[in-house]
Figure (cartoon, rainbow, N blue to C red):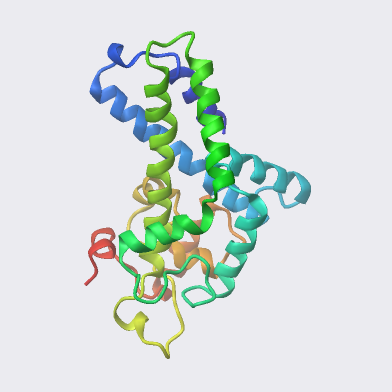
Length: 243
């Protein structure tokens, strides 16, 4: 959260004309990674692993992070996520695609529609306009800065979380598509440093569903311990294009 706020304080007063395209691009990518981090820590809060000894503080931090992430309602996200773990890959899974809508684009837009509401969009618009107003006295490009460093990272982060945390691990391809077989989440077959950059180890998804009490940074250790039981580990490229 501090990194997210600090980067925003640094970048908002800048003027785009004074920055190189490379620096702007790197800044957007860093902001996207930090934006995703907000959700990942909030996700730990939903599992009660952020501050187990203080459930009230655990929930309050999770609520704050989801508010900063995209004005998401904590209670609804918590209920949906519990249903996801109980009914992963089935019709009762709120994050799963509708029958016949398993391709990336339609699944993503259906997934987003389930979490977006007019009230949430209005809250986000107010938040972004407020940030733009705060940046206006010091920057010649306040609205452009909000688009680049707030709106675009949020959109990219939502796609990152969906692809790595939902589409790849819960995609019904090959034998996992057989109706008589239980749904088994897939994990990315990549080293921890790539897993960290991909989505804070969210790609180690079999491990997360098998051991939901573990915090995000504990998943690489769990993968080393249970790698032989994962069904089946998929290289990142293969996960995206199928096989």
